[in-house]
Every structure is written in C-alpha cells, then in structure tokens.
Length: 477
Ligand SMILES: [Zn+2]
Image (tube, rainbow, N blue to C red; front, side, top):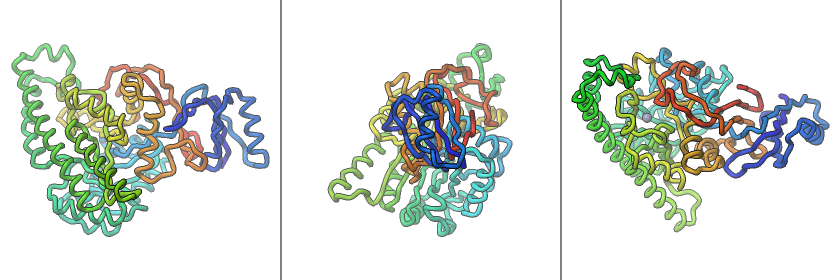
C-alpha cells in the first residue's frame, strides 16, 4: 500500500483546528504535522524526511486549503438491502454515504428478510466490502424476524461480530422480552439501539395519518412535493382538516416517544446494558436522557468507577435539527419520529451542545417517489447531512467545526469502539475533505441514492463534501 502526504489542509478533529499536513502509511495515520506545509515543495521535503528509507511510492494530495477531518460515522442508515432494492441497493446506498463523506455506517435490519442472524449480517457486510466504499456494520434484530418474542438468535452474537442490535422501524412491544434481550446484550457488551415508540400509541396515530392522506388524494394533492400552486386550489377547510389530522397523529407520536424512551432507559438500567436512544426528537425525551446520564455520572463518581453497570447514549438527526412540523405541516415531510415543534428543535441543539446528545445520525431512509406519495415515512439523508449540520449548528448556532467533528466522527467511533474519528497517529486513515463555506442548492435528482425525496429540496445549504479517503486510498475526489 502506498504512502500518502496530504498537504495544504486545514486539519480539524474534536481537539485540533490547525493548518498542516498529514502523513499516512499502510492505511493508518503516521503523523500529523501542525504547521503551514502549504506548498508542494514543503510537502516533498516532509515526505523525504519521513519516508526516506521507504521503497514504497509517496502520493501527494493538495487539499487546497480545505478542511480535512476524520470521515463521518453514521450509526443509523437504512440500506434497504436485501429485499427492497427498488428503494435502495448496496451500490446506490454506499454511493450515497460515500458522497455524504461517511467512512463507516451502521445498517438497520428492517429489510426483507429481516436481518436476524449473524450469517446474513456478515454476508451483507462482505458484499458491502466488495463495493469498496463506506464500511458497513450490519445490525441484527433484537427479536427474531421482528416478531416480538424469540431471542434465541442472540445467543450467536458477540460484541466483536455484531456491535449493535436494534428493532429499528418499531419498538419491542413486550417490556419483559425487551428486558431479556437487553440482559443478553449487556452480558455480551452489545449495544441496544432503541427506536423508542410505544407500539400501541403508534397504532393509534396511524388512522389520523391515513385520513390526512385520503383528503389529500381527494384534492389530487401529491403526498410528496405539493407546491404553493397546488395548495392554492384546495379549500382552506380541507387544508385545516389535513393539518388537524397530522397534528393529532404527531401529538400521539410524541407521547409514544417519551414514554418509550423512559421505559427503554429503565429497562437498560435493570438489565445492565448500553442503550442507545435512536433519533431522539422531543424536548421531554432529551430531558429523560439528560436525567439518566446525570444518574450514571453520579454513580460513577460515588463508586469511583470508570463505567457504570449501564450506559446511555443518544443520537439526533439533521432533519430534526433543521426543520419543524410547524413549518412543514404537509405530509411531504412525513417521517418517524415526526418533525416536531420549535422548542423541541432548540432543545435538541442544546442537548448536542451540552453533551446530552452524543452523535448526529442521519436515519437515511430512502423510498421510491411512489411509496413516498403513498405516505411512507422517512427520506434520504446521507448526502445532505454534513451541509445541514454545518448550516444549522456551525453557521447559525455557533458550534465550532471541532464540535461538529466530535458529533459526526469522534463520538460515534467511541460508541462503536473503533480507532477512527480522530486525527491521531495510529488511527485509521479515513478522511473527508469539506468546503465549509460553499453554498449549494439541494436537488434530489442529483443524489447517488435511489431515494430522491428530501425535505431540503430547493433549499440552499452551506458546506459541501469535496473528497473522501478511506484506508489511505482516494475513494471520491
Ligand atoms: Zn427508527
């Protein structure tokens, strides 16, 4: 494997923000030189000094003054493979995650068939590896085939082979089954990622969404992408009815999330496992997470322990940070959990700032436009994630690029226990090159993902992924 010198870069990770150069050998960071190294001559000299006795060729990359940071890591992606390749397949999904600057992702198991075995998970990972883009960790379902009962398949898993299990797309109805699943995960050091949503309340919300969709259909309003002109032809009473129905649904789904977040954290505490709260979207839920983290911290301090018997981490999505359901009332932004209110959105931003929320995960959930029009919740997110977060958190809310790097790289790497996410010697040479000031307008048609539906369609964002290096090799430039 060749050696690499990336020069003329602004090096950013959770602790560094400095101009300099990076030296890479055999897919690992060899050294980080925090000084100017802006010219090719200085890079050549640097390479000669360090690689002089090395017979391998040295490749020089001019970062052109752009930010070079650890590649992003996404703990929540729907690749839709196997079984739903009309929505996404491995090639399009990993093309999208690479284009979004992600070096590593965790793939959800709500596929067809459901991923309920180590064999299938490893088969998917092997096929993903062969594509040579983003690295995939495939999760396995908590209950066999999402049936909510059987946990026998968990006997085969261990932290090394399957770091995360999840029932994403649903929650586990029975608290007793969830507790047993969490106990097994706790013994094996496996993380339980929870789509916290009380199933019976989610069921109760469904008819409201359905009735909103029916009214829209009556007025030939597309459930995806109704523009102002189409809306102008709909009587105000009908629009009000749609809005009422969605408000009812969203309010039930808020209680569903809050109650399930509380339950899942309490069960994890009882079981002694690491629970990861997926796509946390409400102020109440984030407060529940904050309280649990305080309790864990107190326990550690009192017992003088590095680790408590249980742990809680938490993710938020770019769309919940950028949008509210009050602004996007129509069903075109239909997603689970729904877009919330402004006070929820602000609470999520503060939670990222104070460390209550650990990471940003995309919940990239591609659908065909037909499925979207029929009311399928979720949308594609990998290719807009960095730009949305850079715009909302860095440009509008005073986060530093270092902090954003922590949320998108260092912290998810820590959760997975990977030697990634930092610009440190010995760490994996996975980097993303970004232009933090570039303005661009989102067009779903340009996405690598098969999912073209995005709530950011036509919006101007700031920040663009310009390159990706994985294992010290150029993947995207
Ligand atoms: Zn989910």
